[in-house]
Structures are given as C-alpha cells and as structure tokens.
Image (cartoon, rainbow, N blue to C red):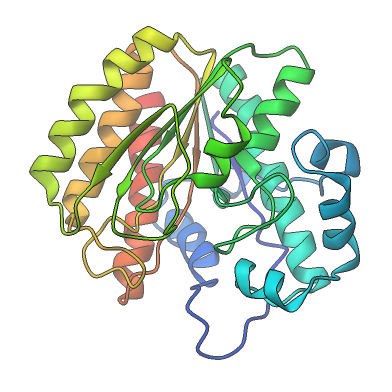
Length: 300
C-alpha cells in the first residue's frame, strides 16, 4: 500500500487577504478521499521533528528563533508568515512528513507528502513562505540513517529552489535540478547543479520538450538512490505568483513524465506539493490532486 503524509492537524491562522491559500492542503486531501483515489487508512500523521533532525540542515541560532517564535521584523517580512507556535509546529510536521515519505519511497517505491516543498529555506534563515527546508532535512536524515548515499532533487516549481541549491552547493552526493521562470522570485538566484531558466509565459510544448530532453539522461548520469520531486503547480497560467503559462493538462503531463521516468529507471521517488497560488481555487486543488493521481497511476 502507498501511504501519504499529511499535516492536517497543524494549520496556520493567517490575516484576511493573505496571498497564501492555506486551505488548499485540506481541500486536496478531501478531494482525493471523495473521489476514492485514496482511503483514510493510507494517511499517515508525522510526529514533530526534534532538534537533532533540524540541526542536520539548519544552524542552532536559527533553530532557537523558530523554537521561541522570536524573529526580527525584517526576518518576518522575508518569511512572509507572522511568527507563531502554529507556524513552528506546522513547519516541523510538514518537514517530518517529507522524511516519512522518503522512508515510504525506499520501501514501496513511492512516497507522497500532502505538504512540503519548502525550498526557499536556507541554513540560517527562511524566506518565501518557507521556514524549514524539508527536502534537505529528509535527505540528510536518510543519509545519517545509512539508507541512501546519493539523491537527486527535481524541482519543477515556478520559482527556483534557491535554498536547496545553496544547502547542497558543495555536496557532490546531492544533485539539484531546478527548472523555473527566470523572471520571477527569487530576484537573486543561487547556482543549482543544473538550472533551466524559462522565459515568462512559456507554454506546454516548450516546457515539456525541455523536460523530456533533460530528465532521463540526468537520472542515468547521477544514478541516485532516491529522487525528491518538488511538484509545485504554480507553473499553470493564471497563478498569482507564477509567470509561466502551462495549462492544467500540461502540468498533468509534466507530472506523468516525471513519475513514469522514475518508475522506468526503478528509482524510488518522493513527491512533495510545493507552490500553487492560482486565482481559481478549483483549478489549484485539482492540479495538486492530479499530481497524486499520476504518482499512484505509475506506482500502484
């Protein structure tokens, strides 16, 4: 059975009008259950990460700020969420869910976190709605457990995975691949092992051609023990924080290709949700749900 991590117990109360659609997490899960794509027995509720887990990736000074919810005003603006115990616990649960999904992937071939993908968090600070870098922590924990040696990060969110790129910049055992809009946040990009910078309003055909041209050979060259897939759906046209123009069908085909390629190569894969801020909530929820459907189609 394929299991899915969920952080539904931990929600962040946000000010009215805040740009982040926190409700998408509950709605995606509800839609998958309603359609019979998953059952409640497949849902796993991760425990909160402990200090040792966080310190595999982030510094102690930053961890203390997270623990105590004490940030400078500039740090709060950079993260984009007001500090609170709810934010702390949500971040710890979401990151723990990605590690749980990593363990599931190594056992079953596929692991899914119905949250995560917080790729803008750095060693000593967070930004862009990201407090902890869940993918980086999961990789570092799995290596400490001697479960993996090499990992490949496939980051197809509309925004570059700058925090992840910086964290693994000098680590030859983790290959970071980010395919993103070059004219979008973050203004200052980091150097991934492979960056594909797409012009604004790139459409399905160009996007999928580039992905299909690159990913199979990349998996062959890096020969990873596991793939972490940041599957942000903010590539879809009309997203409030995205500048690409993929259709929902194009995004579905993107996901299908990633999962099919991992399955063909017999590489375990972890899917985390990443970004999605579409002006139409039904499009946003359906797109995230479709990622899960494609994952299950190829691995079940």
